[in-house]
Length: 292
Image 1 (tube, rainbow, N blue to C red):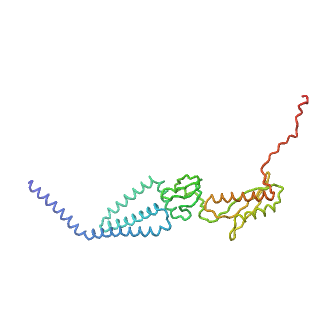
Image 2 (image 1 turned 180 degrees about the vertical axis):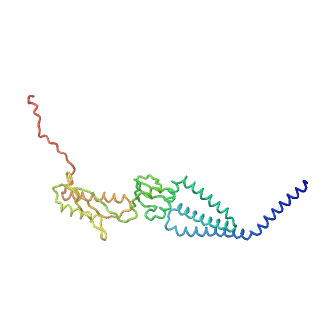
Image 3 (image 1 turned 120 degrees about the horizontal axis):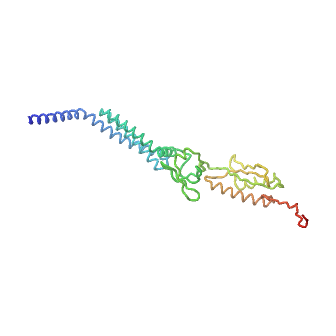
């Protein structure tokens, strides 16, 4: 009885193995085809990655972002090949399970890393944004300096005091920023005032002459002089002119030189730049000899 059961068990195992062998032989062409397709997509991913890297090298200067984008594209192509290979093996249920599991895992990771993913996608946006590049002088989020690095998490700004500021990418995308480097020419504003006794037309002509000689204008550019108010001790004006400027320091240097030139010209012509004066009136005198 035991020998009979043992023989039946052996026969069942051989039948099972035979069925698997038959299935393997019948499915061998699809299996080989699936392997070929998967390997082919691996080579396609490498080719597309190299092609994309050459195309984006001119537009994305940040190596970390460019390499990350290339890896993501290669991974997507390989996943497509993996799913096609599963389809050739008639593993539709497995394919459905993989997709469902990937969706659940992706949702969980997305919720857990919401802030990080926001900065990552913002970094990808910044990498293609021509208005912000490494070496630009920018003002954003209350900071100003030279952009030294742009990665998938943040940008690094080197301020004029030689300190570095790390700003999350999402802050750059969501907040306005001012880029001095994107324009070769910028306008400088210098405010001043002259005494009420001054010849206003002479002051205007003198100031325009000084600024034009010091800062030559180009094309349709011009030096503008405008009186803009009666102050407590002076008649105030603003003079505006164009200079070559790619950062904030260039503007400050131009203001510095303009102030020196205007002051020197005014001293030569006797033009007064007044400062506030407080007058105390002692007309009411106290008689100490007067009896109460």
